[in-house]
Image 1 (cartoon, rainbow, N blue to C red):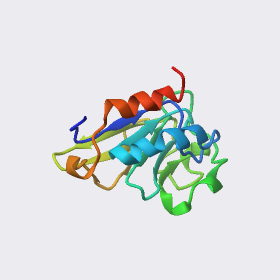
Image 2 (cartoon, rainbow, N blue to C red):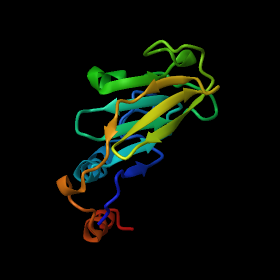
Image 3 (cartoon, one colour):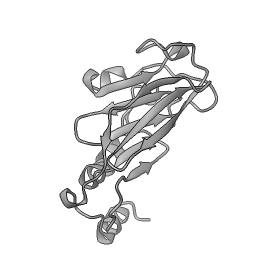
Image 4 (tube, rainbow, N blue to C red):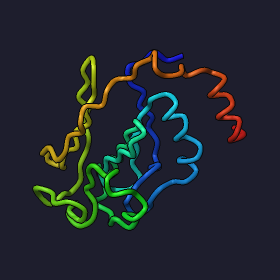
Length: 162
């Protein structure tokens, strides 16, 4: 099993998004239980936006899809995410459709700040300007979580008939 301080799972499609593509129900149903069980966090792209969603389950959802081909998509699925779960959103014209950005966004990226006890995700504009910084995300406490067992993964992938 993993004794890692942080488990970051990367995917193309978002589990949750207020952007034009919205949520991905299959990921919500199949992947989300594993993220919660193992204290993991999910990072993705697909929507050309930048989002931080925290639904209060311990899993942080980071969407960082504004690296190319323009920013930002409209917030067509705003109603699908509880407002208090949206911690940061750069969406819509110039990135300011949900909350005001300090400059018109042409794109953006994220960086990570890790310490022995916590992690922060920092969202940046195309020119490096810091737009938002998550609160401290505590490291996994291996004693409090189940270890990631090989048989869990075998049964998970078997559901997809890989």
